[in-house]
Length: 143
Image (cartoon, rainbow, N blue to C red; front, side, top):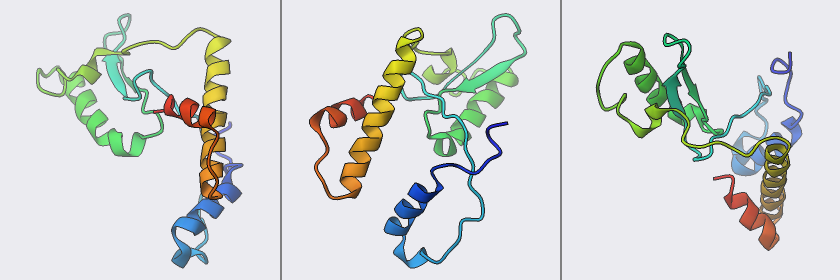
């Protein structure tokens, strides 16, 4: 199981945390974890129910912003499960995926290109350096 291990980015996270919160430098991290982060083509989550199994509802595409968007997702999903017709079920987010990524291997190549550009851009900014123009451009694709 890959999600029950500490993140391999703990040292990087510690460095960033200490920079943002210098007064908490002595505080220890009690937990860290790892896991996948799903993306959507719009950067927004989407919700729906399976055509084949009408009693199976889903919410995907939180794009790394799950903590902030989970409350809204709960409102949409609970309204869908209860069969309500309200602002939550009529939301544009309750219509299923709004687009699709390219097929493999193009999706993976594009995802890694953008992810690495974001990392280089943020590292340059953290070091007080100017990021490369192409890293800034590619990072915009991440949302």
